[in-house]
Length: 368
Image 1: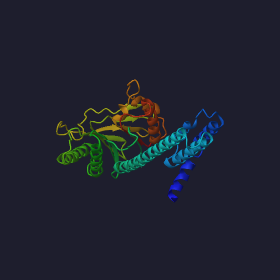
Image 2: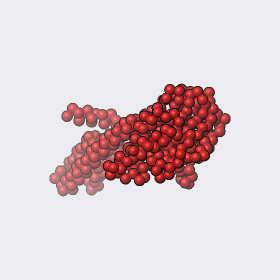
Image 3: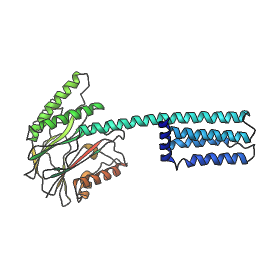
Image 4: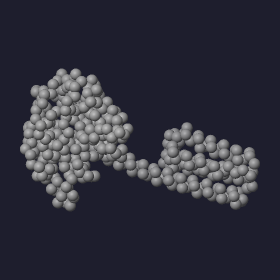
């Protein structure tokens, strides 16, 4: 009982101003019905009061408003013929029944709301375990990330990124798992776990990518033995090594979109990757020897990594998001974090507020 009263007080504090609207309607309808001709019946309009209350309150406050509406209907009946008239009995019974139905709807809505909150809590926890926050500073590098989920109910998907410090270098992974449903989450977890372990064993990004391929193939074989269809399970990825003492980018490409290098003068250049390796998980279908490519990473520049959820986002006219052009305009941002904040706002404005696919962004700035 104490808990119910506490919850009712909480609802009252939350919607104490809005609740004046249904209460005012009850008073207005009741007084008007009593004062006007007995041949005009406004009592049925009292159902509006409990009907609008769920828009700002819970089941208990809705039940209270509904009870007050029933009391008002009884009061009106006393002034217009008494409670024993069939018309008033029907009106009172109908109002009470509608109130019960509205309160029942409120309870179902509240239960679903609690379940959704639990799902989001679990989703956030899984997201935090899978993709640990990257360090803001790693040697001479400043790092920022943004994950944009296409689904409001969950923040877990197939896009992934990770960073590992290996003494005098930072190794990065960004990828996009192409599995379906929960399989994508499991594949992403397997790939991230393998990267965090193998990044300490392989200095060359191409050899690290080969090791990830072997680990990912073992993972797919295990889930295939369990009866899961893995024919569409593969992952595009970029594996990067950024040495502290040398302003260069060393990377191996596994079928992923090329990185974008932003220079202090406002330039935006997609790194030319002359030989792209196959996505992880497809090495048996298209055996290609992966190579490590090396590019200059001048101090003061920013490396932008992304998944195809960014570049394949379309506006109402089906125009793809022009990432290089937009990023070049935003290059004067003070930090990688500011750059990604501006890119996020610009991207959402381009698509009208909602992405059709998950997207991940990683910005790495090299201090001057």
